[in-house]
Length: 305
Image (cartoon, rainbow, N blue to C red; front, side, top):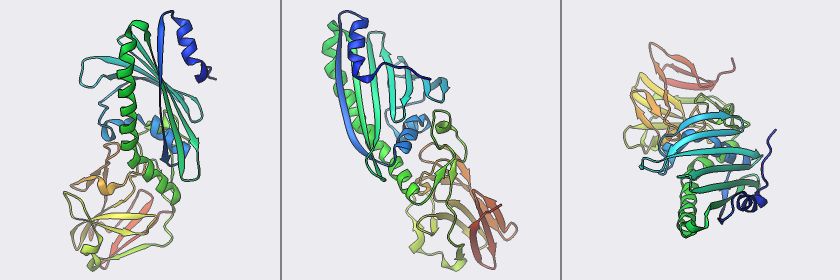
């Protein structure tokens, strides 16, 4: 059970707590692709931040529960420590708090709401509190926080739009429903929908039409709209195969870093080995699929075991 001050009384409560306190309130709102559940996962998924956001470096997780996370982070490249408390107050509502040098207290209220099956609302309201003598700093902080939220939502778009697309195609995740534990499990959480029919690829069908625009490797993409696969061809008798959606949380691996039969996820920096087929090892079960190479034909089917 969690008890908290209602967001509508925060400013008054802070002023009553300490005489001479000045509070400045700011707000940012936008529409975001995806469900409230996936927006919550995105918020609680702290592991993506160093890879997606230019603002964040590493953070030290002090403690975590299903509905809270307490972390130590730094103010940019400055040698200042900031203790950030992130709490899930209600479904779709979060309180995030920290202090700056013990002089300024920042309390942010983050709320997600349903719009339709493909979009959600996101409202972020912050309360900057300090002694009245520091009031002139509030305006600068308010502008910085607003601009920060504009940038963060823009950077998170790639994650939210991809998850919304995967949900439309029938994907689920072992991290559902999200909490601060499940959202940060660095395991294979993607539950792929079943293939409608086996994917069959003749070795001679590898052509420029199927090539993926990757900076470092020549890669090919085959499969259905809902489920596709990335293939690295070493020779007519040796191939490496990955699902296009990352086994961790569904990132598009087309934008990953491929090297020596492994791919690094662009969202979380995790590395995944592909299913390496050859004449010597012509059948492999991995990531929920069976991959088979026989008589110049690659077959990908559902693993129902």
